[in-house]
Image 1 (tube, rainbow, N blue to C red):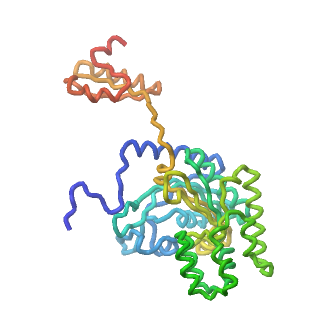
Image 2: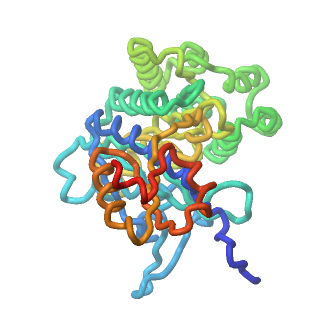
Image 3: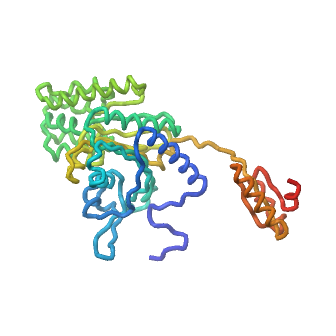
Length: 387
């Protein structure tokens, strides 16, 4: 196969200046909010060992970029940020500081089998709150995700909340085993109502419970969940009351109208063990980000602690944010051999006062006339002596 000179690897993209600037703006706004909420920003390596991060990541093995180091160890380009941060949190440095709040803005990598418009490299920003298993930790990260969505200007933002463990218990009450429950959750993740209805004919669900089972995808409030709660199951009752308290917290904090409680909601990220959520906004047909509780992941690093967090896809945020055309004043100074020193001094003086200044050698001024239209002010060499 011949690789063309300007061809990029599958799924890789170039960010041209406008997009790069928009991303930088999103990064600034998002990370400022993250730090204001008490989270400390960190950066993990781009490369991790396959035997640790690669294996425990919720990303499928065929979506990992793998390579060998000089010792023959298999490495992966980090496929997510939750697993590397869990590794960092489990280190001796941070183990004794629980709870800890860590934030990030980083690139992640997921291989694509074929071109379908999906990026193989993209930026995520988010947080991980580790060492707190309370309901208030879940409320904190969801509220912070909401604050970021509103700060960066996502239109019609909303968050869908579910509970992995509670859904698992409810499906068991319908008589489904783990394999059958897994198939149902896959269809729930895909929002495939037709598939759920077709699969229900093959499941051991009694006819008098079938309507109740199919109604799982219609819940929008915690009160709607009550019809599926088994009053004889203490764990279900506790988790349901937790969700009632969470809904009340959101209402008190002004998020009530932005949150949908969907008992059928499930995530493709397999390390989530409790509350899960996804963020949506106008302009993007995909979730802008997701998060949830992943206590079980921490156990793989030898820590019996609670953990919750979220990650937002920067490329999808851009799809939901109305781009503002910001006309920033820019000055172009054209110089030749005679005016070079004066041009340099003038540029330094203007930059020191916060102005954007471009220096351009231009002995033939006429050839640059179309280029000068991009600037709000053009200073030619012969004018430097006059101010």
